[in-house]
Image 1: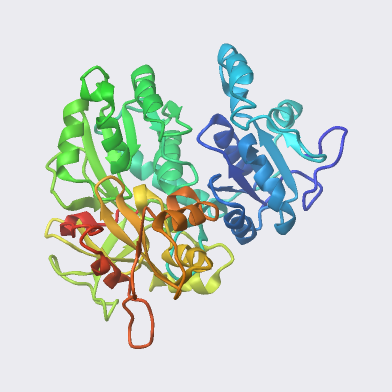
Image 2: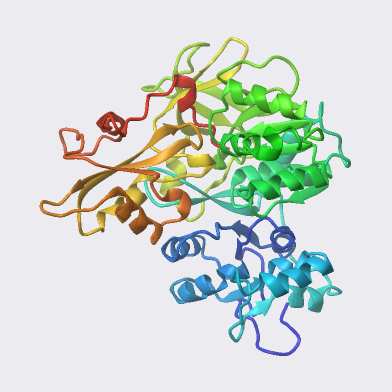
Length: 522
């Protein structure tokens, strides 16, 4: 689709997008994000939503990992992308402004009072394009002659791990349709097709927001309410009251914040439209579930899934009894079994603890460009979750612990080694270990234990400030403790599981009940 006049976009075939191209989408939840994702599919390309909060270093890795040649970028991220473009395969940048889909009066107010102040006003470099201008140029053009099959790659979503940098899991068009159909069927006893509004407040660069919510909404033909910043709790409360959604997804941190909002605490906020809420990414405590259900009058359920399973996993039944500690039953066509830790081919009986293995029709086809890691993720067709748990006699899944060291603050994924590598570059640091600790607000918080060089000095605040310049905000340790030594194995490997016991009395975090250390991977 070469533009009429002006410079030609630098695509691999002289076009903006073509079959198999990867398009990175760096936007919050907004209409442009969905238009870009659907447009990429229409052209036969692969959509790759990317966290706009990534630092330049993280963004270079992400774009190189997937080989993205095109990026759709919200204006506050434009300069950051341009600064690192030469270190990536990126050939074409398409910029979009959040005001483009605001009502006329709000667009005017935004232009006057916020656009420059909040970094939304940019001047494009030669060869780059404005998103609405391209849409206008091609609104009457025929669809590109792209042939897409059900088993072609549709979506690349980054997933954390403990064996290396972030990898991109590949989901096919068939996998997306299967996942959306599963969730639509699961929610059907409570949610009505066409009419009930779904709130899309979980980020679209995360499997939770993109597959469990957006794709489900598309399959269910549901109206969608897009929330660009769910951390703005004032806006969340106002949006719920104004748009009257029937479905609200979230993580425990979000539900706690909503309950603590002054309008909610005083009983002034009206959440009565909420028929169904689902919590994932971190353990849902029974007390929180009961409090939120009392406020809404609706039902709150819980779920467990992974990016690698394209949301194939377990979810609490929307009707029927609730079992504290359980994350639910397998979704339709999803098989879950508990494998012996030493003999994965052996399935354990009800009540016995082992590794959780999952098999589903929507499983990822692998990690983009990483054959060895893709093969290692599976055992005879079953995905190894790396999580430890058991199933009861009725098939409910319980998660007790994890084999991997992945940390999940507020549902985000943090790889400890990445944080350790950043802190280790500080001149005062000799050694560092990072692990997750229970946190009543985030579910799990990132904590770093640091051994200083002899004669050097540094404080926790100093090291956290150092991290903020080099890591996305959710990866910055919430706690930093200076210690004389780190626990190590006989071969010198830092024992992350032993780090929690290093806390001094002043900095100690009490060990949570076993239910609290569950890892809901939404």
